[in-house]
Length: 327
Image (cartoon, rainbow, N blue to C red; front, side, top):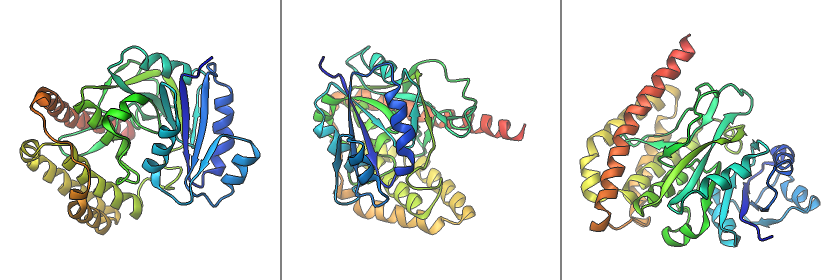
């Protein structure tokens, strides 16, 4: 039987996560998939472990980041769909089956985001699809909320690439993950790009994955992560918004930058945030900007509406999270 999906696992020094992740894949109810690990020049014994266990792998000589690794895997794959799965995840047994079923509902669906739950705190959500706001803030829908919720399938701005399925042929039309991002916001970027091309990104609550979170970077906030995310945020807006939309959103974007600056100053990463912004502004012209086409006007209008609604949704979820913490 011809395989429908290739599961691509990017790995960089993730040896400690290998065993539970692959055990979870062995327990899948749907075994009609190819498996491919793309190793980003690991030095922790991952390469020897993968060879010893005879797991199909591509070994890159250096760390090309998340974007570089998954692009290599996507190009190697020949299946209808590809699942991108972080090494620090443990999917439920019916995960692959549910993901393939969800994306097969419509050819207009580019990606499906799974229900990601915190591995070490299973009563809390990690991600129910990624969202974006007119403030220029990307955020995980549902993060920190009770995992008993988020039971309804819906459209989301973008799938979280830590455990998502994609229609492979669409990459040939819209391009792969932007390697200038290296890591962070690359999944929002490609989801945004797909929407401009007329595709949809949806959330499937039946496909459940348990996620460690920050398994490669090691922490929620660090200098490397803050700088790259700030730079990539500039890239994200510059590449996907036409000039008029950028001008229209300039005030909320600047407001979002100001709020983030004071937040990072409070926790000691203000200089990293500013350096990332400077680098983004300086190098944005080197990235591939999507040219405006009048035929896409109503798509941009719809996206703008989603960005505005996304801001209110962020505030609503933030307040809910604070109330849960305070209670």
